[in-house]
Length: 152
Image (cartoon, rainbow, N blue to C red; front, top):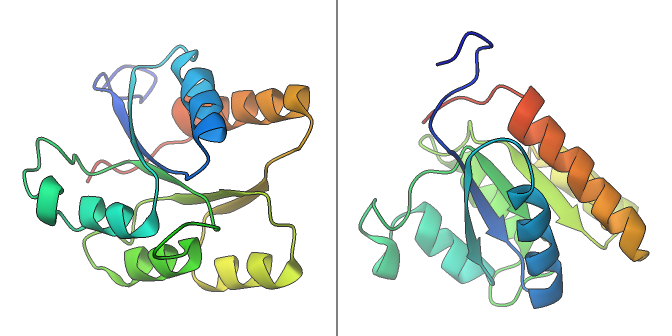
């Protein structure tokens, strides 16, 4: 740990996003920050659960390090984001990991349900490219530079 309280090792981020364009923008933006980080990207809820619970292709912890932050889209194939959130927060091993919902949905039902399931933040992806980049920049600074996460 450094004098500032930050860890020297990379921040492990699990990005669960099915839109390839959004995933690329998010990974590029987070890669631009002054912190070391490792971003693991999966594109559906079923694979996300396999990663988090170390099943199938992710049984080896070297291929699926426990993330310090999860960025979670709600509209996912196979298993939706709210179900992924529910399972993460019900797991004694995973429940302390901050989960940031990053979605296009502004539906009050989705926001309410996400917080009832203990999401740590709910962010709506802007449709305007410059606003999307600005949001990613602010997200990166907060979760990668300012917020102190528990190392699991």
